[in-house]
Image (cartoon, rainbow, N blue to C red; front, side, top):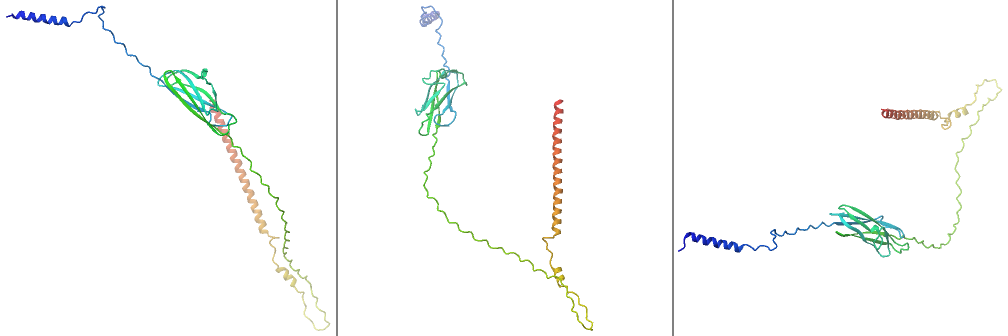
Length: 290
């Protein structure tokens, strides 16, 4: 039977053997440092292009050239390699021009790098021939690309209206109008005139008959018939009306007095306004001199 100390030694040896077996073999290269993991790569943010096209006017006549302003706006990040790659018009009879003509390799087509929030513009033109037969709506399409952004596009529409020619109406041949016989104008009716008043009988005196008699006769006076009739006639108001004449004279006198008062009031008001204006100027000059 084994002793207690011998058993402990056996267990200790078994444990050491187990530890030695579990230890990995040394690296022949002699490097004890662990292999570092590769660092993660960060992707730069992509930019966003906002494109708009604004025509100079919405309606034009055939033969006119309408300017179209193309605006490019970069958002979210700086856009690099920005350039215009397409400007086309529909229908094909329309003529396109400006700073960036086809094949879109001119310096006006290249915008370069736009910072975040930066803007730039390109000027294009569109027109139609003079011999356009009917009113036509022309649509101008623009495409802009960048290296780190999706392509942006915009469109603008201009209507080229053909003026309507007014055709003269056919003239109808009409027969000359028949001359109408003029009727003789009726003779004017005579206006009745007021009959003049009958003349008054002249005043006369009747001489008393001479009687050769010795009988005394009473004295006979001349008749006063004509005198009484003359005094009984009414007076003509139209010829001698002193009341109307006096009233007209009074009205003219009052009107003259009122006109004089109004003229005096107007002159006084004008003088007051002139004095006030001169006083303002004097005050302003004093204030400026201070």
